[in-house]
Image (cartoon, rainbow over the protein chains, first blue to last red):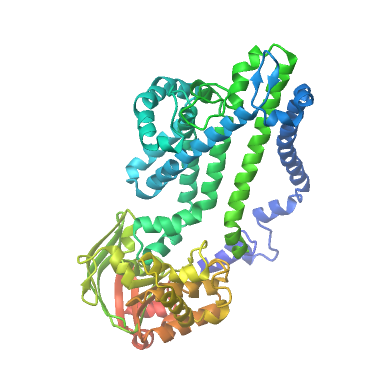
Amino acid sequence: MSGKLAERDVVNGRESPSASGLAVARPSAARRYLNAQSDSAFSDGFFKTLMLASALTIFVIVLFIFLELAWQSRMAIAHFGISFLYRSAWNPVSEDFGARPFIYGTLVSSLLALLIAVPLSVSTAVFITEMCPIPLRRSLSFLTELLAAIPSVVYGLWALVVLVPLLRTEINPFLMRTLGWTGFFEGPDYGVSMLAAGVILAIMILPIISSITREVMSTVPQSQREAALALGATRWEMIRISVLPNARLGIAGGIILGLGRALGETMAVTMVIGNRPEIARSLLAPGYTMASVLANEFTEATTSLYLSALIEIGLVLFLVTIVVNALARLLIWSVTRGASSRMA
Amino acid sequence: MGVGIEVKDLNAWYGSTHTLRDIHLNIPANHATALIGPSGCGKSTFVRCLNRMHETNPIARVTGTVKIGDLDIYNDVSPVVIRRRIGMVFQRPNPFPTMSIYDNVASGLRLNGFRNRQALDEIVERSLRRAALWDEVKDDLKRKSGASISGGQQQRLCIARTLAVDPEVLLMDEPASALDPISTAKIEDLIFQLKSEYTIVIVTHNMQQAARVAEKTGFFLNGQLVEFDATTKIFTNPSDKRTEDYITGRFG
C-alpha cells in the first residue's frame, strides 16, 4: 500500500513519500523548473521566420532563373516571336532558329523512358517489398539505389559502347521485322537514336521510381494486407486489391519525379541520341533534345542571336518541365478525384 | 451454417517466444465463444492460428492440429482455401479506402471470380442488412469510399464484407475495442443475432462483453488455456484460482 501512495504523491507534485508528512508541500524539482520557464514565444517566432525564409528562398531562386533566362533570350524572342516554338529550322549560318525538333525530342525521349521504366520499376518494387526473401531484400534495394548514384556520363559511355551496338545488331532488326509496319521502327538504323535515348533514360529513372514506390508500399498498413488475406486473397491478389491501390498516389509521385529527371537529363542523352534536329516518326532515327543542344552548342554560339536562341531553348525547357509536371499532377488529381471527394 | 472447431496440441511461436502452449479446445458450432485474458496471453495468436493468419508473419511458427468441421486446416489444404471459409474481423476497422462501400462488400466474392451482377447486388444488400448498416449507407453505396464513414460504421462494413462470402466460422479479434459504447452495443447485438448461424470466436478484453454475447468462455494466461467452460460457470464459479483472480480484477 505504501508503494502505491508514494506513486500518487509524486504525481501530485511531491518529491518523496516522506514529504507528504511535512506541513508545507515543496514543489518538485520538475515543477519548479517548468514554472521558471518563459512562454518561449520568442524562439517560436524566430524559427517560424527562419523556416519561412528558407521556403521563400526556393521560390525566389526559381523566379530569378526564369527572369534571367527571359532577359538573356530577349533578342531571339523579339526576332522570332511565338514562331520559335513551332518552327523546325536550326541554321546557325543563316541565323534561322526554331525549337520544335528539340521540344519533340525532349518529350518523346522522356515519354519513351516512362513507358519502359514504369512497369519495370513498379514490378521491381513489388518484388522487393512483397516477395523477396528477407536476406536478399536489403542488398537488392541497395543495388537499385546504387543505379541512381552512377554519374550520367558513365551511363552515356556504357550506352555508347554496349547499348547502341546491341540495339543495332540484335534488337533493332527484330523490332523492324515484327513492328516495322507501325512506322515507329523503320528506316536506316544508325544505333544512335531516339530509342537508345529512351532506353538509357529509362535505366536512369528506374531507381527513382522504384525506390519511391518501394518506400510507399512499405508504409501500407499491415491491417490492409490482412484485410485482403483474410478474404482468401493469394499474395498477388493481396498486392492487386490492397497494396497497390493504397500506394497509388505515392507511386504517381515517384513517376513525376522520374519524369522530371528524364526531361532534364543531358549528358547520357547527348551521347546516344544522334544530335540531329529533325522530327522523324521512326524511333530508330536520330533526334535532339533541348538539354542536348544547349550542352553541345553553347560554347560554339558565335553570334548574339545564336546565343540568345540557345538561351530561349533553355527557357522553353524550363517552361516545358513546369507544364509537363503540372499536367501530370492534374492527371493524377483527376484520376483520384473520385476517391478523394469520397474520402472528404 | 457453422461448423465446430477442434484444436489439439496447438503450439505457436513468434521467433523464439513460445506464445501458445499445448492448447486443447473444442469450440461448438453455431454458438459464440469468447476468449479472455490479459494482454499478451496469446488469445489473439490463438484466433490467428484458426485461419492460418499467424503464419503470414515470416518469423511465426505453428505446430499441432486444427480441424474446422472435418477439414484439417494445417494438412489438407492451402491457407487461401481456408481463409475463404473462415471470416475474420480485426481490432481496427480495415475497409479498403480506395473502394466504394459496395466494392468493399463485394471484394471477397470478386476475388474468387464471382461476376453475376444481379446476384452480387442481392448479396451486398443482404450482407449490409445483416451487419445492420444498410439503412445508413444505402444511398451512397457506390459513391462513398469505405473509409469515409465513421469508425463504428467501418467496423460493421468489415463485418458485412466478411458475411458476403458466407463463412462457416467468424473470427473476431477484439472487434469493438476501438469503438465508442454505442457502436460497441451495435456490434454486440450483431454477434447475438449471427451466432445461431455462424460459429463465432470472439477475443475480447471486456469481460462484460464476453458475459453478454458468449455461451462459452476460455481464459488464457501466459500462452496457456487455463480454463474453458460455460460462460456462466466461468464468471460465477470458476474452477481455477487464476481465473477467479482475473475475473475479480485482482490482476490483468
